[in-house]
Image 1: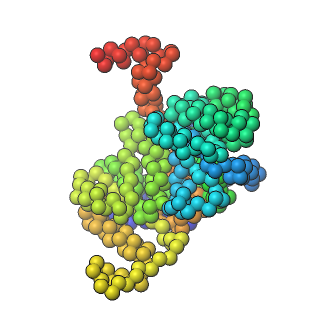
Image 2 (image 1 turned 45 degrees about the horizontal axis):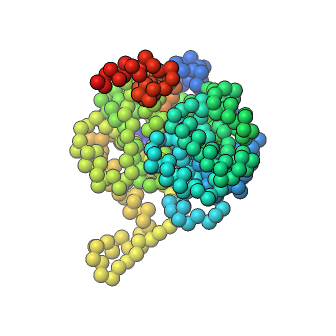
Image 3 (image 1 turned 180 degrees about the horizontal axis):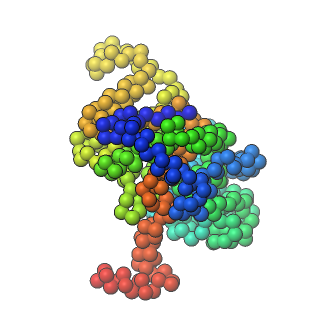
Amino acid sequence: MIKLDITKVAPVVSTADVNALAARVAEAQKALEEGTCPGNDFLGWLHLPSSITPEFLADIKATAATLRQECDAVVVAGIGGSYLGAKAVIEALSNSFQWLVNDGKSPVILFAGNNIGEDYLSELTTYLKGKKFGVINISKSGTTTETALAFRLLKKQCEEQMGKEAARKVIVAITDAKRGAARTCADKEGYKSYVIPDNVGGRFSVLTPVGLLPIAVAGFDIDKLVAGAQDMEKAAAAPLADNIIAQYAATRYLLYTKGKKIEILANYQPKLHFIAEWWKQLFGESEGKDKKGIYPASVDLTTDLHSMGQWIQDGERTIFETVISVEQPEHKLLFPSDEENLDGLNFLAGKRVDEVNKMAELGTQLAHVDGGVPNIRIAIERLDAYHLGQLIYFFERACGIHCQLLGVNAFNQPGVEAYKKNMFALLGKPGYEKETEAIKARLK
């Protein structure tokens, strides 16, 4: 089970301070469980892990098997929570040089629909020329600009290269149950499809087909991923004193009230980079409302100690740090001895590289705490599907609790719509004539 250490946030926040918040945390938990909180129509993620059946997972795995058998590459088209969770898990579980050492058993997993980069899309479609590729199109509406644009390009290319009948077998839609452009297209074309539950928002959707299908196509064990989340869901019912999820949420809230407005999520395992990207969306989009919320940032250490390390050590003291630490690496590599010892590192000879990394982690923690940076440590035993499932649910539940403590609706994102309205007005989208006129006047 994941372990949490909050002792290094003192003296800014003490254990007694955290314990004193027990009643408010219990109220927040109750509001989530009873559905009395703002955004209560988006609480489907809360007990999603325990609702997942073996039959459902078997169906996901069967579709994944078809894509794995038929395709050299599979493109996941989605944006925000519709791709970040899957990418985070796939990157965390993959060989760091997976595409260089690909054994041909798993298709290359690519991502599109998360940007409007012409060069990116052009290079993607060029890469896919002559290849048997499939598409997992993830969109509730089917009209999200970035994803719809990418899917239109990919659908056309897939059909041209493979023929409509063959393309129909390798294009999968993950969308609304009944409505929207993506649902209409899937029904018309006869694509295999899965439903994004109405009561699960994108950033909480990793354990729906949105995340599970791409992860299964990549060849990873979704049974263990779900099992990890199920065990963490059970642990979430405990009172504050025995509940690491609630303790993390309470500690974040108390640090925020003490002026710590930025949380830096740090890792010492490069494969966790996209876990941090997913985490940033989860917390940033959930709590950044009503002029409130902790700003979520991230660093990859020790790499970023040679850049951002200076700011963390000596910059403005509005930050706290949360470190995800992997206790046991999957490989063993010993540091070699060198006869000339020009680099002066023979004192490390015979030690595991991970021991050096762990001492860098501990040394950094001590330095940052000495520099006035409160430090939270989340330790996971291994970087495997089971523990990633735990970590995903841990953060989701903590996010829900923290937003209740802040007094914001965790499940909407009104600020996201602002750029879309301006973009559509600038592009002259039908129905935006007044907005187009107004925005052009502003730009004169």
